[in-house]
Length: 364
Figure: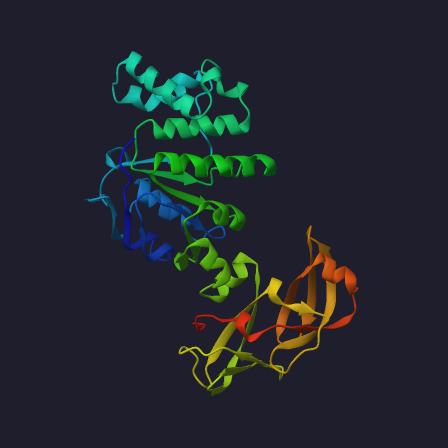
């Protein structure tokens, strides 16, 4: 297998015509041998970024380096990458060996050599017993393994995956996540994986890159993304924080006071980015909020219960609260059962200063 390559994306922009900007001056370094997930909603620029790394999309400005080579103007065949597309695009009339060996056939590799290499890749995927079958005779997970084997047979320095799990059912997705992580660890090459699933990115990646409107909102390990989202977009998109927006009303030795438009205010930790009178946003993790406990001034609010959902081990309680469009709490199941609440109840919510996270200042 080829040596893993670092990928360096330097101020890359992709425009479609004078107005439409799909990727807006993105810069990113992906370490050699790491598993990187590009994460974000539809239209955020993640697939365009992946396709520019592969060479399937031209770059409007900026450069991409893979290993020691600037590949900006190189065609896909001359890049040390291989791409697995969202649709596996297997040839229905060929058996698995010939499907996997196809790229070697195009390169003129002798039949015996390419078939031996294809069998080696199928063995790596646990598919050797099915070598003579056609794709239609396989399950979705097996078809995905064939597509992976075909992508890896050229010994790429980086494997690029465009939503590879999107066509699988939920149970198979979990199994294939484990397979992808094992494969990346065993091969040691760089994986770049596009997904819109937060759970998928958190489970797989060493580096999660959250994108929005063609830009990178945050690039960090999954635990940092979860615990310390950089922006309000990341906090909301990851779905585990409540975001409060207001203006800085006071700054003192212990922190600051954030005033919301409806008159309520909350305390924040010290942060050099907070400026008196300027807009600011804070995030509070949903699982760090106590429901039904006395609220200290600046460290809680009273909310009206709108909805209650059972999540397995915890309850998701959605409330209307002053200063927030919608406030959500993840309450431990046993704690909630000890003091249950119903839709329509007014309940106090409380949190600690240590669980308040100051976000990057809003740009609007």
